[in-house]
Image 1 (cartoon, rainbow, N blue to C red):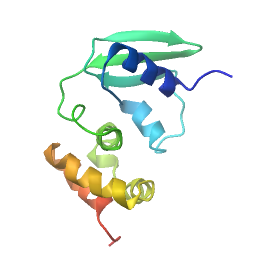
Image 2: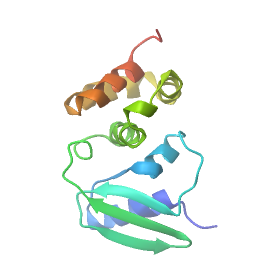
Image 3: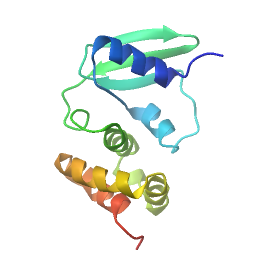
Image 4: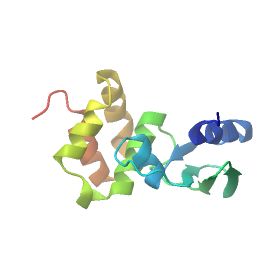
Length: 135
């Protein structure tokens, strides 16, 4: 059985000492906001631009110094990248509730605290996702 492309990406990043975060369709898929399986698994990284072929997948790393990609825990970074990939026009109550339900209370507290420095529109949605009780 072939290894999961996300595990392969993590192993490549660990070997090269890169910090990575899934972005674009990869982030949406991992957040269960998309069911489409892409042949390209895309990550932002503090390493160089690199692409690797793995089975029938391509794993692509894009260098960034973007404040939405570095300095966050995995869950916070994944959520920020997923919201960014969706865009503000595509985020509705259903998306907020789905993301909220996928996080434990502790994860929501951590994300709320960590994401304070992100872009204002993204943080507004994070506040809704991380609130204690649904409205």
